[in-house]
Length: 150
Image (cartoon, rainbow, N blue to C red; front, side):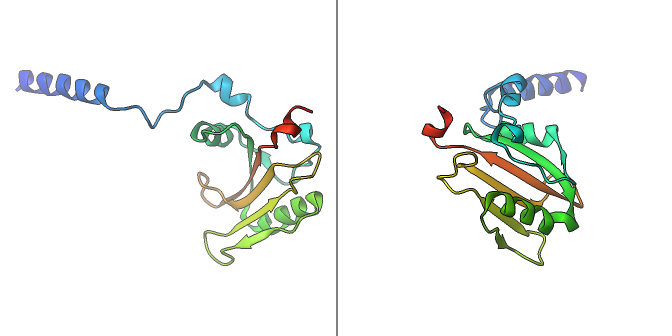
């Protein structure tokens, strides 16, 4: 029986080792941290009642195959409308709202492409994917090429 268990363990290890690693992303923690958005670099104020969650931010970056900078801030669920209004006012754009009254409530504010400071910024205010009972503000900054070189 022990011999069978040992043979099974070796076979399982070989099989698992041969599986593709597509679920893993290329890069290191140091590379992912370089993609964490510091809102001050684009003259963006952060919703006052939010807290940066570096773990959720690096998880989002790790799962993203693009080059956008990101930051995830946690907020209380009842602050979601206030947070989206805060960013809408700052960016001079209205929030797109969907799913009101459902768990999938989503508020998105997009900066105008020609906005010299914020062009390429999307702000998603939604229920937190990985924190039960919390909301999140997900900042995604992917400016146009000509803006990146300025």
